Image (cartoon, rainbow over all chains, first blue to last red; front, side):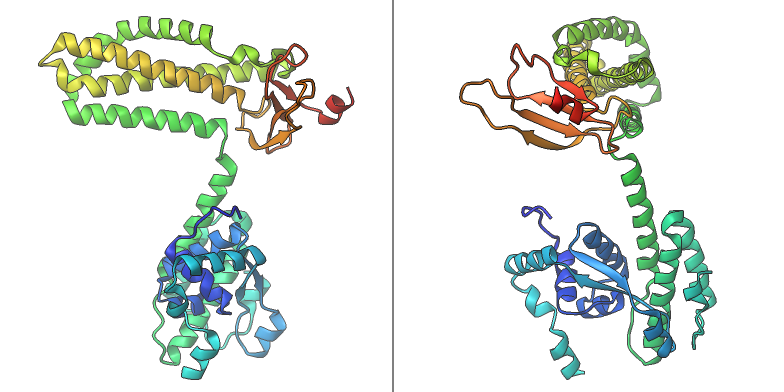
Length: 107
Length: 279
């Protein structure tokens, strides 16, 4: 990614959520409060720009829980740098997306 | 249906979800369709699963459709970005917009009267502008001997001609749009203003057209990309330095020297880079 490329606020929010291990589209929607029409195309754009990468869950794992396998997203090295830069640019970002551990403790 | 969708699910999708999936799949390019369908089948299934556990999950309909549209738009972007077709369609679209602006501003009858009465003058002015632009363009610095076969050459010239015609029409329509409000009150001033505006826009447009023509692949007419600086600035000015731009389909590179010299007087098109390096 070119170092000058700046993420929009929603893209930064989604990238931050993925960096905090919210790896499924629905999880990202829930934690960011963004609508599906924003989250899913943004995930595609982030993947195209090499900031995140996606993979399928192993079929066996999903079959064992009687559910279809899902696509999950992971942040890449350039994505981590971009998330860090976005956090510096939008200081409130860290407060908007709670860490997964804190979220699980709360629920 | 892909094997992944034949999975024994405890909760099948509703009829409305099935309809949404079919509608979205029709928008997605064929190469991505199976993957997209599998992805959204799983997302919808999990959405219903979470809803049954009394969690407020918003609808995925907008996401599903926008995701499908994004994939379609992205496939078009990859296929047409920088192509001659996109260039022509964009110019034709701008001409239509300029004509519609004129129609909206002046009304149908007045617009037809103004345009119709100025077409002969437009043809004469266009001829003069084309001669001046050809005479002053810098395209002569491109080594024409290295620009491909006869068929490719004919195609390039046809593209340049079509692009130039569209640019001239666009310049004419824009100049008419600009001067339309003045035609009834100050016809002489409006006429003079239209002539100057047209000439300025047409010459600028044709200069762009020549420059754009040089920056396109000589085979497929796609815009060249990934410019790379080659060589280092030389103290004695004897070493070659310049910029190379490549065709994304691998037809060759366009080599532009930083400084024209007697041993490298032209920008030139290189199809076989290894051959050029060895010579």
